[in-house]
Image (tube, rainbow, N blue to C red):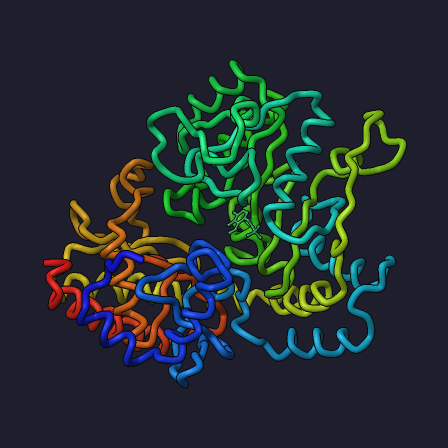
Length: 455
Ligand SMILES: Cc1ncc(COP(=O)(O)O)c(C=O)c1O
C-alpha cells in the first residue's frame, strides 16, 4: 500500500491504535484492501470497533470515539438504543426466520404508513440498493417504458442502472463504469440537478418511465436540492405523466419523521427506504401508490407481474428493531435533536475555521455537516449558506486523497470519527459531544499545519 499519510502522523496513529493495526493485518488477508465497504478504507489503517453506545464507539484499545458515521446513517437513535436492543433480544429467542408471514411485518408496515402516508402499499427488502432496483422494475412494468432518469451526483445504491453518474466527473457525458455494460447505460438518462428546463427537455426527448431523486440533493445534500426545485419536479412529472420516486433511504425518518416529503410537503408516487427504517439492522422497503405497487400482485391489471422473491424480506429481527425505532422516531424528538446538533456543529465549525484563519468552511442542513477544505470564496454568514452557488462541479469533487486520509486520521487521534469530510448527527449527540468535536477538529488543523499539508 502506498504511504500517503505522513510518517509522524502515522507513528502517532500506530501508537494510539495498536490493536486495530494488528486486526488490519488479519483483515487484509481475507478482504480486498482489508475492508468490507469502500468507504471504510483508511490509511494507514481503519480503527476497529468493539462496542458502541449512544453517540460513542469504543475500539479494542479502549479508546472512546465520538461517532459521526452512525451506522452509515441508520442510527438516528444512536448506538444500541435500549428499545431496539430489547426488541431484538426478545425476538431472537422467539423466531429469527419463520419462513412465513408474521404479525411483526404488518406492525412494521403500519409504522411506515403512519409516518409516510404516500406509502399506500409496500414490500420489504434487505437494503436501499434492492429498494431502488425494485422501484425501477415496477415503473417499467406499469409504464411500458424502458428508460430511467436520475440526477448527476445522486446516489441510489450500487446496482448497475443507478450507480453510474453517482460520482464525478459529470461533464464528459460518459458514465461508463468497470463491469457495467453499454446496454444498461443506454437505459439511463442523466440530468444536472436544480435545472428544471433540462429535466423537462430530457423527459420530452427520452420518454423515461420514471424520475428518481434524493430529496435533499445528491449524496444527502452535498449539492443541495431545495423545496422550490422539488416542487417544480413534482409539477413537471405530473404534467408529463412520469412516475416520481423519492429515494428516502437517508432522508426518510431523519429530516423529519415523514422524511423529506413531509418537510417539503410533496407527495411522490413511490418512496424507497432503508437505514433508520430497520433501526440499524439490515432492511429496506419500496412503497407507494397502490395502483403502482399492484404490479407485484398475481393476476394484476398490467397483465405482467414483477417477480419478488428474497430470503430475508420482512425478517422478524429487522422488523422488531424497525418497529421499536420508528415508534421513537414518531415522537419527533430524535429528528429535532439531530437537526439541532447539526446546526450546532456547522456553526461551531465555521466559528473555529474563522478563528484559526484556515480557508475551510462548513455547510449543510438538517442533521448533516460537510466541510469544504481550501474554499475559495467568502465565509458563510448564515446557516442557509450553500457554497459556490450550489455548483455541482465545484461541490461534488474528489478532494485530495492525501489530505482526506490525513484529516480523518488526525481527527481519530482526537477521538472523533468523521465520514471523510462529513458528519451525520443523531438524537444521541449532545452539546458536549459537539464541544469535544470542535476541539478535536482544531487539533487536527494544527497537526495538518505541522505536517505542511495545509496553510
Ligand atoms: C439515498 C440512498 N439510496 C440508496 C442507498 C443504498 O442503500 P444500501 O446501502 O442499504 O444498499 C443509499 C446508501 O447510502 C443512499 O444513501
